[in-house]
Amino acid sequence: MKIFYISGDKISLISKGLFCLSALLVTSAIGSSLSFQRGNDQIVYRLAPFDLVQVSIYGQEDLTTTQRISDEGKMFLPLLGGVSVGGKTVAQVSTLIEELYVSRGYLREPVASINIEEFSPKVVTVLGEVETPGPVEIPPGRNSIPILVAVAGAGGFTGLAKLSDVQVKAAGVDTSQHHQRTVNVSDSLKSGDSDPNGHYLVEPDDIVFVPKRVF
Image (cartoon, rainbow, N blue to C red):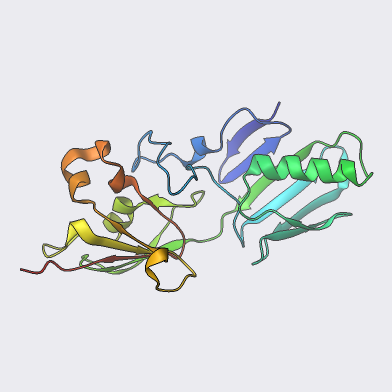
């Protein structure tokens, strides 16, 4: 059984999981809407490059290490070397490390504990017809935020914003149409939580562009 507990900005996990880390991720901006999706990813924190993470094995103090995840998404663990942890949940990383120590013959029944000591900074950029264009911080412990929360962080829409044609360009991709999405948020502002477009998730380094209405 894995048990999660929260202490300050640390998240600890001890052996096989019951509680979803998404409980940490709920904020007043999105209420209890844990099912909002971008693609197939639900709102649950996944380790990211430059997160500061402590890994320890119960009863094996010499295997404890605290380090930042590399830009390639790896941690370098005692005896194991490089282990890819970026994009995985705390539960997945704990299970992976336990399995590696067993499969490589180092330990029989390891119990891995993962502490996130510090979350890496993450931002999205909101441009165009908003009051204060520029970067908007994603709260610590989150991999994404709803598009309307990002716009609110940029001061909200101007009176000239075209709400039916908000453009989202995914991070690290070219400008081809395949890698961009048009999000119609006008209905969301009228209907509230019933329209999923307002909860479309934007991720670190995404660019949100709000065009001007043409009269």
